[in-house]
Amino acid sequence: MKNKAFRIIVGSFILISLLLATYVNQNWLWFTAFIGINLIQSAFTKWCLLETILTKLGLKD
Image 1: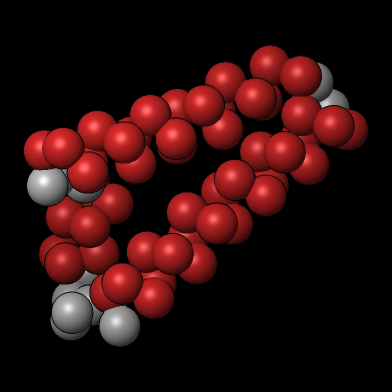
Image 2: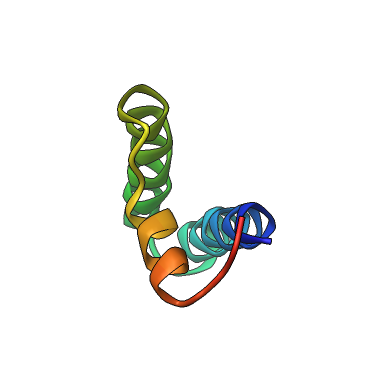
């Protein structure tokens, strides 16, 4: 369940930031880049803040 919630949240953040970059200000693309960098970082370190938050909220694997 946590894995599904993680993918939904991250995907939503990316789509929202792309919409904001298109219709509000292109600086929102930095948020998209931040998400990508965090995904790469978590692949190497096996740690992700969003997973920690979801675990504390009670979501199971």
